[in-house]
Image (cartoon, rainbow, N blue to C red; front, side, top):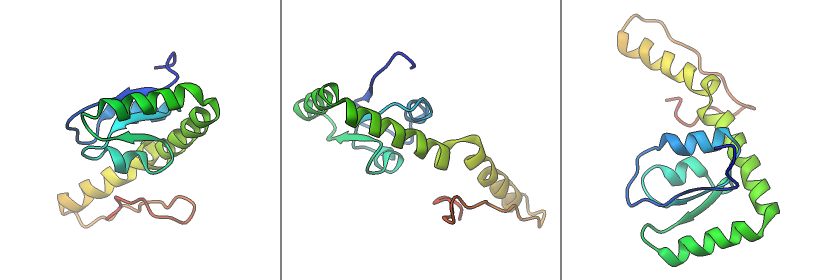
Length: 124
C-alpha cells in the first residue's frame, strides 16, 4: 500500500470494503466504482467515483490523478482525515461498545464521543 500513488478499485458490487479503509489509513487518494457503500465512505473529497463498468470513466479518472499531483495530495489528506474521523479504532470502538451494551440488555449505555462537535454518523 505504501508504494501506491493512487488506490484503484473498479468493482461491480461492494458493501463497505476493508481495502478502502486501508487505503484511507495510508492517506491514499482513491478511484473506485460508485457502488454499495463506497460513495458514503469516500465522501466528496477523498477520491473519485466512476460508474461501474465504465472503462472510459475509469481511464479518465486514472489519467486525471496521474497528471495532477496536487489533486492526489489533497485527496490523500482528505482520505486520511476521513479514516481518522470515521474508521479508526478510536472512532469505531465506542460505537461497537455502545451496540454491545444495547443488545446485551445490561442497562449500561456507552457514550459515543463527538468529533469537533459532530456526532459520528453511525452513532444511532
